[in-house]
Image (spheres, rainbow, N blue to C red):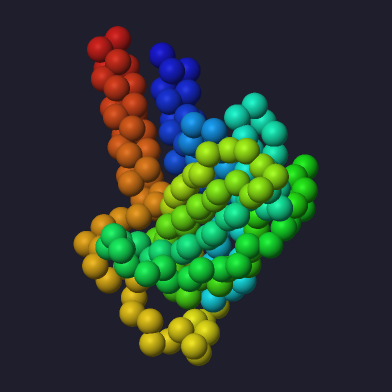
Length: 195
């Protein structure tokens, strides 16, 4: 019985206190898929230049380089209204990253911490053959360096979001301690019933 309680406690400990790892985001359409990678470590920080790149592939796994795609990137602060202009429209350049050569990439400096959405739209160039696509990626930007002077007049991008907890470990910590307490009480009840 003690082994089961110990296994529960250790499991909750590792789930609760293990650092969160965010994998690359993957989005797909019927013909095109993209993997979003943000450097460094998929953790953008406000006020700091961030390199983003999209590993575009066609159905079957063939890579789509930027030379074969008329791609545009738009960055929206969340929440945003339909028809609202993008906050940023960074220029895409060919990037070589990991095993991908010439894929779309850009440097972005997010002005403030908060939630953003990246819209990647693309159409085939004259020498490519795939259906046009529109992929949306949600990105959370952590606090970083102070905001650049030219963006000081921007309002807080998340001012309209109700006060709520976003991507923290606090709920998991509370749940973990609750499970530990339940496990300990279960152990004590079993021990008392044996005696």
